[in-house]
Amino acid sequence: MSICGKVWKYGDNIDTDAIIPARYLNMSGEAELAAHCMEDIDGDFAKKVRRGDVVVAGKNFGCGSSREHAPVALKGCGVSCVVAESFARIFYRNAINIGLPILECSAAAQGTRAGQTLEVDLAAGIIRNLETGGTYQATAYPPFMLELIAAGGLIEYTRRKLAASKIGQGGQHV
Image 1 (cartoon, one colour):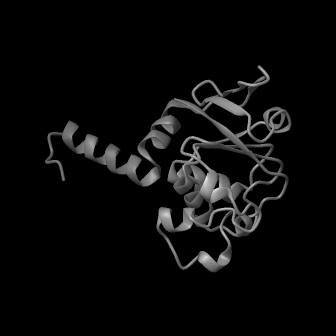
Image 2 (tube, rainbow, N blue to C red):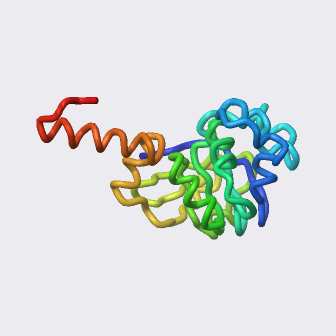
Image 3 (cartoon, helix red, strand yellow):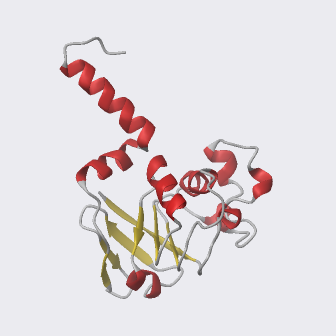
């Protein structure tokens, strides 16, 4: 699974309130949340981000509350991947659960600037900066995680697995 996109660069401690302000937590749809993604720290983000773009950040990305709204807003904007020096654990889990790939890689986060283009190979964990030629190694995703991400998250992945196991057992597809 390969991703290629323009970089949106942010610093350390970008919390879930910065990703999606609390005043929008009464919304749950991807498109609704996407319209307000990053608006308090980058007012143009939601209008200018394009499908496939990559968010790159410093340490502790996604800290703060445990709301799933934050990775949903990023995914809804078309962000294909987040690369950071480190992630808050609950954000990490929420992102994977909704099928938003994230990679921890300090060297890539530090060696990348806004507007550059990154190519990310999730299966190999390789991040390439197409402007500078820099290549960085993150931990590769195992095959089942790649399937989960490709399915769009844990719920759809589980649905597919259950349907496949029922068909494989001679059961009716439900």
